[in-house]
Image (tube, rainbow, N blue to C red; front, side, top):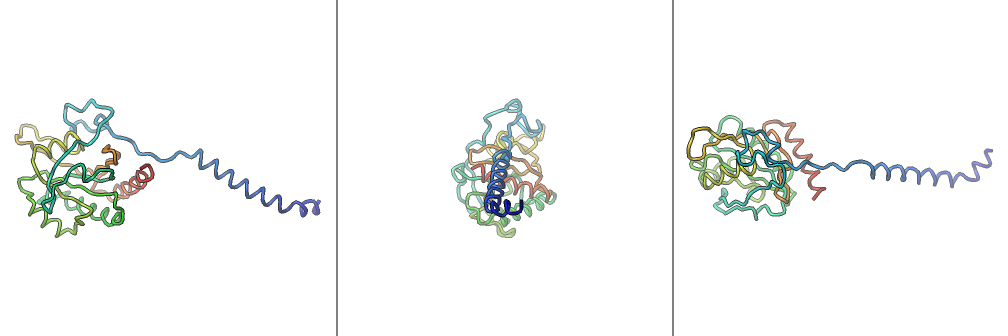
Length: 222
């Protein structure tokens, strides 16, 4: 019996190795590939969505825009064409959640500094205060990488419409004219097709880690 096994030992070893590869291949083929949800207005808290969109369940994308960044440069959807990006809404004089959100954006900036196809975009909700000069001071103070992260200001109605009809992350202020809005702590993950693929609490470190993991999933999907 021992002689029999000794005779066929090389064959048994090769067969064993092949079996391992076959089993691994089958496991890989059957294992579901992680894929992020495509979010629609109907998936969001109605408080954050314009009433004209609350029923929408498919085909939602970020609208065209033209705003101005901390360097006085025009930023449009073309700036983010074929890019993955993280967007949020803030204002430079905010003393509550904004400093935490900015610190977490800086962490994301650091983690993704070598990723040229992943960008950041922060919109002010007080463009009457956050002028280009004010955004530049804030960007310099915080350490914003101009090649990675745009802080944008512009027409308040356009910013309001983007917040309420595209990114779905601010609350309307009832009875307040001139497009009053209360921003939330939400970070929005947008894919190269301008679709919303994730929503994260920008004040929660664990959520920032989840966001970074989801970006990796989205990169593989791309």
